[in-house]
Image (cartoon, rainbow, N blue to C red; front, side):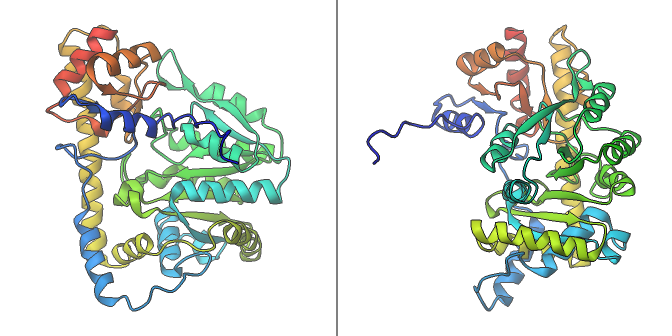
Length: 396
């Protein structure tokens, strides 16, 4: 049966990582894959994670299966991080959370749920969006459509076009919104714009699915939930996919969650019963270790405070690289305006580089950037900045 199997095309992002690893150039630079790196180009293990793991190792007494929805303590911490302590959604128990294998796993479970329980519903993705969004939802059987988002002229948000697109979405369809640190553009709506989006979704009967993978990397852990909280003031039903890969550095532990918000505790429970079936048919129950780490850190006042400091360090390093990148390009006499990158948030920015320019950077200088021009700012360091900007200048 395997004789006629064709080689699958490489993933557009992970495939670049494989090329990067195989590149013998000692000065190579990887700005493609979405992984945080420190100023030495390493992806560190947070100190609070190490402390939590030590506690877990000392106290753990079983490797038995978790429930289909994961560890209840973890799910409770997920909700508190999303909405804030004492939020009405939590106190009224209108939310139900399932621990999932990463944010990607949460998105796939959400896609399976939508396809099976709401057949015919299409999902609308921002133009542009994370490349894997399309493939995840198409694999789940959904039809993907696009709504306007980025203004190419300003490299900012075209909010009027976005609103016009939302008004055209049919009732009963789903819209995917990036909770903060939009991937790949780094462009986020303001709280006031989030409120307007909420009004439009209610008016049109569109269900929001919020992909919240970067909480803490824009302004702060509490501040970054502002858009989600504006939505909750307007919209009573939503799905939220969250991840702890970036803000906890738990990339390989696959630690995510799918949260259902309903009109009532009964409605949230009913929807979660369908989500649990999708989980059962897929991976049965989630891995434990990452969730234990998150629950341990967030459930300990001292560890939580230290974790907030560590997230701030990550955020501040990324922001410092944004400023240094723009300054270095300007100092080198680059005429093209890259100043919008300073206004963007999170690990990623939409550089405006063309595919041809990206190809030249890889072939001539061993600088790896996704074909769309998305750059991982966290891959920049003070040591590689001069070479990076000199190379970009040469291809513009």
